[in-house]
Image 1 (cartoon, rainbow, N blue to C red):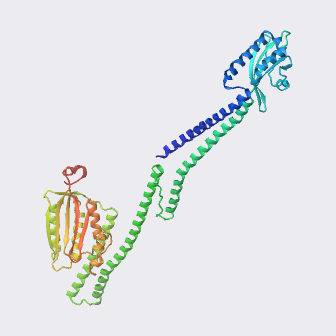
Image 2 (image 1 turned 90 degrees about the vertical axis):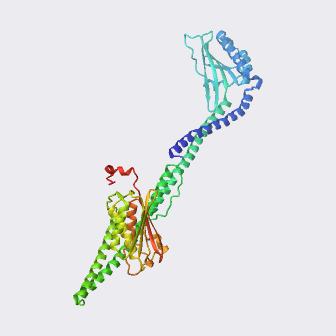
Image 3 (image 1 turned 180 degrees about the horizontal axis):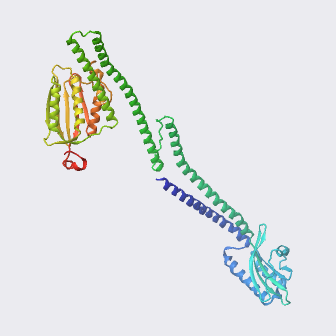
Amino acid sequence: MSIRVKLILSYVLMTIIPIGLFILFLHLLFHLFLNNIEEMKEFYQVDDRAVEAFFYEELAAITELKQVALSSPDELLDESIVSRYENLLGHRQIAIFVRKGDTLTNGQQTDTSTFYSYLPAHQLSESDPYVNHQGQIGEDGQYWLYTGTDFRFTDGDDGSLFFTLDVEPVSDFLTNIIPLVITGFIVAFILTNGVITYVISKHLIQPLKKLHRVAGEIASGNLNEQTGIVRNDEIGDLAGAFEEMRLQLKQSMALQEKYDENRKELINNISHDLKTPITSIKGHIQGIIDGVARDQNKLDKYIQIIHTKASEMDQLIDELLLFSKLDLNSIPFHFECVNLRPYLRDIIEAFQLEYDEVEIESNVSIHPDTLVLADRAQLYKVFANLLANSVKFMNQDEKRIHVHASERGQVVCISITDNGQGIEEKALPYVFDRFFRAEASRGTNQGGSGIGLAIVKQIVEAHEGMVDITSKVNEGTTIQFTLPIVDENKRGEKDEKDFNC
C-alpha cells in the first residue's frame, strides 16, 4: 500500500471514527434522556394515558382563558375565575398571571415579585386590539416558558394575561447534557486524530530515522549495517534502493581492495620479472666490459643472451600495456565477419613455423561458409597467448598441441589442448584472474606476468564469447572458448554497422 493511500485512509478514519463515536455517544445520551423522561412525567404529573391530554386539554383551557381576556377582560380581575383555571393547569406546573397596569396578580398567590421583573412589558399599540407573544424567562438555572396576550381593560388600563411553564427539569437536563455532548465530541475527535496521527507518523518517521542512522554508519565506513526495512510502499522502495546502493558500494570497496592487492602484486611481479633479465643483461655487459668474452664466439653468445633478455622485457611490457588498455576499455575493436576455416588454417600454419619443435594438430569441423563476428588482430592475440602458454609449460619430450573447432548451435567452440605439465585442480578457478600464477604447477624458470589468460578472457568476452579450462597435472591442459556465429540477417548489415560480410 502506497504512502498516498495510507494518508488518504488516515484522513478518512480521522473523519469517520469521531463521527461514529459521536453517534454512539448520542445514542447513550438518548437512553439517558429516556430515563430522565420518567422524572419529567412525575414532575408534570403526566401518565401514559394522559399524554394526549397534556397537549390538548391544557391547550384548550389556555385558549379559552385567552378568549375571556379578549371578550370580557374585567372577569380576569375575579380571582375565583383565575384560580379555577389554575386548578386545571397547575398540576402541569403551569401558572397564570394577570397584569393590570403595574399590578401583577396570581390566582394561587404565587410569588409575583419573581416574575414581575422577568415578564415582558406591555406591547400593545393604540391601533391593535390585542397582541400575542411568547418566549423564555428566568436565570441562574431557573427558567420558564411563557405565552402572553396583551389587551386593554374596559377602563382603558393596559392588561396582560401570562401562562408560564416551569422547564427546570428540561433546562437542567439540557444544561448538563449539551456541555457533555460537546466535550465528548471534542475528546473523541482529539483522541482519534491523536492516535491515528501518532500511528501514521511512527509508521513513516521510524523507518526514515533508521535510514538516516544506517546512512551515518555508511558515511563512517561501516558497510555491513543493513536497513532491515521490508515494506510495500515508497519507503520500502527507498530502503530497497538504499540497500542495493550499500551492496554495490560494498562490492566496489571489495573490488577496490582487490585492485589494490593486484596493484601491489603487479609491482612485485614487475619488479621480479624485470629484475631477472636486467640482472642477466648487466652481468653479460659487465663480462664484455671486463674482457671475459675474449673470442668472437663467446662475444656473439653474450650478445645473443642480451638480445633474448631484452626481448623478454619488451614482451612483458607489451603485455602489461595491452592488459591496462583492455581493463580501461581504451582499445577499439574493429569487428568484421570472419570466415573461420581459412583464418584458423593460417594461424596454425604461422605458429607451426614459429614452434617447429611442437607438433600442432588440427581438427576444424565447421562449415566452409561459417562466419563469426571478430576483430582479427585481437583474436590473433588470444591464439598467441594460448599457444605460447602451452609451449612454455610443456615438459614432455614429444610436445603436441591439438586445435579443435566445431559448431554447437549458434556458436563455434574452439579448444586448444596440450600434453604439458597441467595445473592443479585447486588453482583452476583462479587462472583467469589478473596476475595469478599457478606456481606449484610450473617450473621455477618459466616466469610469466600472470596476465596472459586474463587478456584472453577479456578479448573473448568482448567478442560475446565464453572461455573455460580443464586440466590434470602431468597430463595436459585444455582451454576452450566460444565465438557467436553470424546469422543470415547480419550478413546484409554491411552498410549499417560496417560489418565486412
